[in-house]
Length: 65
Image 1: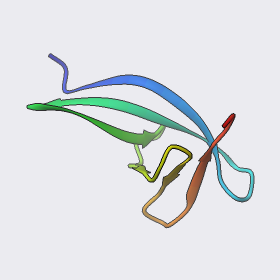
Image 2: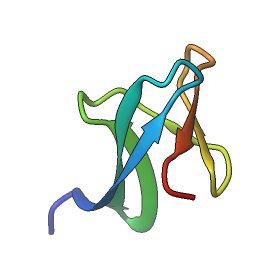
Image 3: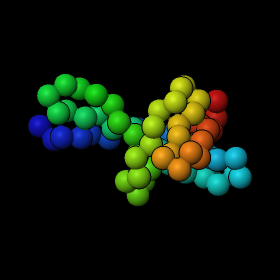
C-alpha cells in the first residue's frame, strides 16, 4: 500500500489575493491520517474548515466558501 494518496485539492488565497493550491493527503503510516501540502510540497497546517496556515504565519483562505 502506498504511504500517501492524494484525496483532493483546495483552491486558496492569501490576504494579498495570491492564489495557492493545497493538496489534501491520506497518510497510511500504520494509522490513516490526513496531511496537507502546497503543490511544491511545502507543509500546510489545517486551522479550521475555512483556513490553512504556513510555517511563515501566512493564512490561506479556501475559495468558494
